Length: 496
Ligand code: BES
Ligand code: MN
Ligand code: ZN
Image (cartoon, rainbow, N blue to C red; front, top):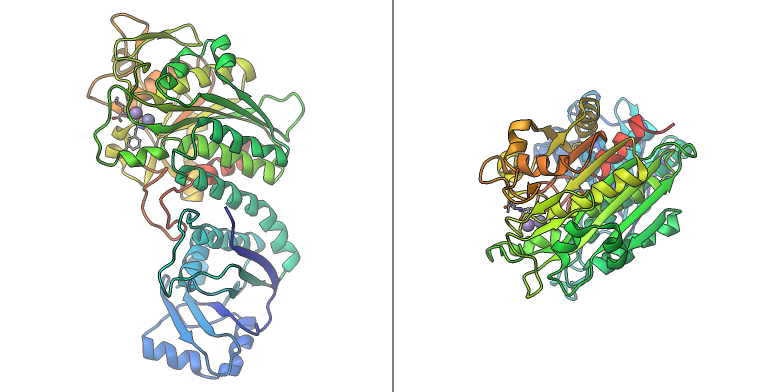
């Protein structure tokens, strides 16, 4: 996707044109460098603030067009409330970006508070928020309404006290921003464009960042015994794929951390076909796989000191003369037999084989899978938290902390032998649905039967991966959820 936004850091100096963005606290105070920039405008800001009842409250903004005495075409003052209370600088960057008119081709954002300049990490967080908010998936739009034309290029400069230090902090955040946008692009793409083979091709472009990418075709999967995954894809004209991505930035030979993603490029439900309403959302049923690709992009992009494996199962779930039926029994790679009760519970079938494969081949420190797995988790948690299911308390706590820090929050749900019983099958070792009750839990119990003793966490992102609330950092459909969470988890605990 052509990114029309170019961002960079520079020292704080009066811009000659474009939009000027500055921050003020709830006493309408500015930092000293900002104050110097605004000096030629005299009492303009004070008068405009009084006229507009702007008090510098967090979330408020003052917008002055053609500010008298200043060269910029527009001055935007963003309120931060009590500067010392500010915690989420990513959100602040998103909010600032949201105030800059879409038609603006040039902007200067002065990263300074009344108390002084922002720390380099805070400045980088603001830049991250700006990039996330600036994202739009518009590659299939050939027309623009009059007055909604966009500049071909946008150039934004962040004015900072220490340019060197801010650039260094940004070089890490930049990879995270890029990874999140990669994930969003994949989720937003329509399924006639992004079918399993095309998804695999896009994942393979990670090679240019130094990631080792292997693509398993159906023959290779058959040989490995991945019949649970292959059964889901057998009703589709598109061939299934498994992609293994490896980033080796850690100690040579050290056990990797592993991430597994559900990549159902379109989920019709198969023979247990879904109702028509909102079925179009099921192009996003590969958000877990998209997150894994985005995460690998972020880790490789910032040369993380970790060995990481990303594995994604890519299929399309279609009804067809060759589609799998309710009551079919398949033998998974693990050797366990699975009775198919409902062909719409397909994600767990895909994950069963990929989890088993990753566990057996890589013996990872932990496995975390991400999947838009159940409508039930959306009923339980809405769009605010992803469901977290895990056999490991330490991993769960670390995920919860990373969730609070990044705003990609998780909520732990239970697993137990009693729930596990609900998926015992009359005819096979396990069945792929557990009845009407506790649907997100029985789905997780199913997955747990394919991870053995490996420390494992399952993130049910059916409510957070797409169609989630419009926030300061996301105004699109796909959220790219999980890239920031898992990047933070790795950065905080698994780099040497
Ligand atoms: N991809 C869906 C889950 C889903 C629903 C994700 C809504 C995002 C939004 C999944 O494959 C599915 O169909 N799950 C079924 C399971 C049921 C048949 C046991 C569900 O949740 O209804
Ligand atoms: Mn389904
Ligand atoms: Zn699905």
